Amino acid sequence: MDKQMHYGSDYKFIPTTSIGSGVGMAVLPDIYQHTIQIVNISLVGNPDSNEFVLVDAGMPGSAEEIISVTEERFGAGSRPQAIILTHGHFDHVGAIIELVNHWDVPVYAHTLEIPYLTGQKGYPDPDPTVEGGMVAKMSPMFPNEPINLGDNIKVLPTDGIVPHLPEFRYIHTPGHSPGHVSLFRDRDRALIVGDAFVTVKQESLYKVLTQEKEISGPPRYLTTDWDAARDSVKKLEALQPSVAVTGHGLPMTGAELTDNLTKLARDFDSIAVPHYGKYVN
Image (cartoon, one colour):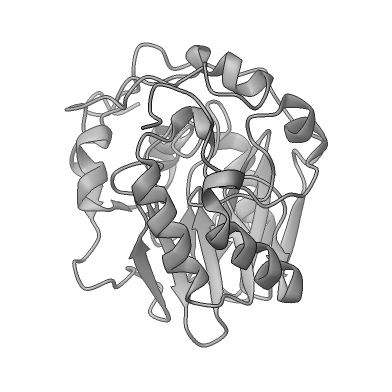
């Protein structure tokens, strides 16, 4: 492993999984979602081509699974042109160092997320006091110290362009983290959300394990700016996406997505914002 890159000292495997773990699906012909334990990665690109990117990097210890899934879809020895991070929380960068070492590809994130990916700054501590379920109570055990990707992390262009995905633009959707981004394609209104909103109640262990579909705001225990999170959901709802691939939970499409996202944007405070917690005003 490149000594320039390292995880935080609290980096470790998290023994939590769901019935969807190991399951992949082609949401669209060129967008493939794969679930690793409790989080999703996305492979974006036509499977007949070697031009594709990976969005997010899974859970700690998942590099071999991500490489295997990638080669199953794009062929032996295939590698993405880049890795795009929606944000830097542990369940979205869990295998990033191993993947960079294996593939030798650049990683991109929003400029406000860079300090958390270069060892300069740690995220605020998770809040186990929010209501919602056992996962929230477990959150202090999750890795939270900053990782350092050294020179391998690049800043996303300021004009919204997503490197190697010319049809997509990124949208700054903070709240869950300062530099959180979502990816949107105007042609078919496809949205890769990250954790700006999710389709499973991520605080509830039962719902995480069973993957019961339910639109929700960003995971409560790691969200520190609820005003920004509310604005981000409204921003995404205004795009009228036709399909949404979220960081946690199953994809939503069509009328189900429209109706649920409209409701979430309208009733964000009652659906998403916890009634109490150290990051609630």
